[in-house]
Image (cartoon, rainbow, N blue to C red; front, top):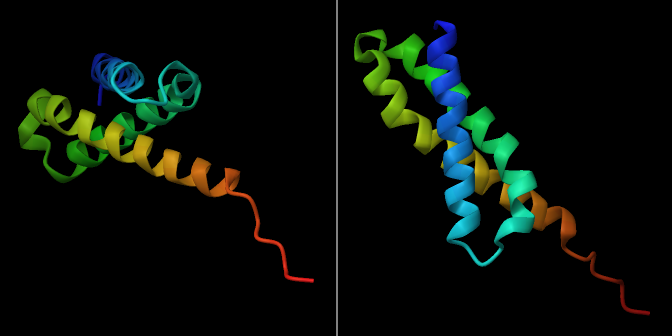
Length: 92
């Protein structure tokens, strides 16, 4: 992948994170967590598409980038919820 394709994937991941922050109840506080996850997910998904299906070109990167960003944002939210969950206390 050339540098322009990588920049395109990173911007797609950032846009998905902003849209998730605008249209979810968690809102802006989740933005600091979602932006790095969205960028990473879009870049990794684009790398996988470029490796598995190079004939798709930029079209594959634009289509697969948002899906990778959404998947990593949802996985990151699940991890964050699991870390914030209080531990049950043993009955005494």
